[in-house]
Length: 340
Image (cartoon, rainbow, N blue to C red; front, side):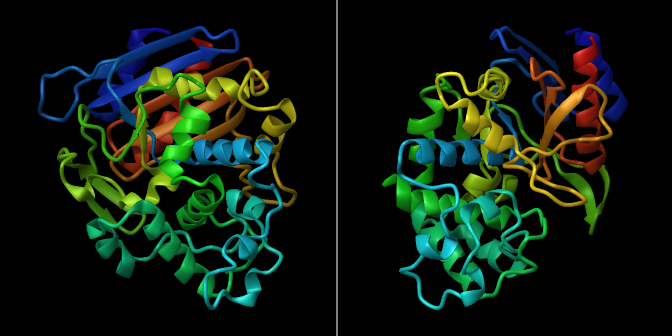
């Protein structure tokens, strides 16, 4: 991997920093980093720094669910209403919808917890399993929205996190460590804005349009990331080398972590037209040389990962600038890594 590729990305898109990794099925990993830890600073970003991968966290949550299934603590087609049978006033419209549907964002959950709940969520200091249960409670009291149709949903993965709290016998965060991170020797992972490298939002965001480069977001500020209740949907940070160790399981049919059939289920696309997300991954028909992709952003970071057609290599890219134009370009940079 040539350093000039990342340096050109930093200059061209005026991002503070970008990191990339190319991992092969044999376990070899190349890592490159370019730029500075935050805009206006001379401190260089390092390969050993931790990077926020946003909604690419969803693939970790799906793999954790798969581990619980293989361990006999969960089921693929487990009805959502059965997991939360103790909650009052669950709408009957959820009958027949499953955790599988939620993992593929086809269960009918709203995209997010809603603006009126966001501000209190940033201030909420209760244990996260309590917060997730509350999110599941109010989400399930309303009828599902167009169940069976794909609607990208952070709330869907928050509810899956609440289900994991119940079935794993330990909060989602500890279950992820015990079942996924530790077996893969991933030691750098944590939740929230990482301390070393700071994310950067757009200076002005108007609906789906964002304008101008924004200032760095202090990780000590709650709004430097989504609220903590989003942990299972998009708050993970880790080094790119550790992220590569995770993505490698999709190149080696699960390795020692999961059965090959489980990997295929995680990647399987549901039938139908339009965008079809598997459990965190999509098939990108417009990207040459690739079979699956995922992207993530908390509006202050931008990340992308690709698997090549033969599933022999994975390319990962993450930058500390959340502008949409940067997020869109990370996929192309990841594609370029396959050719260099």
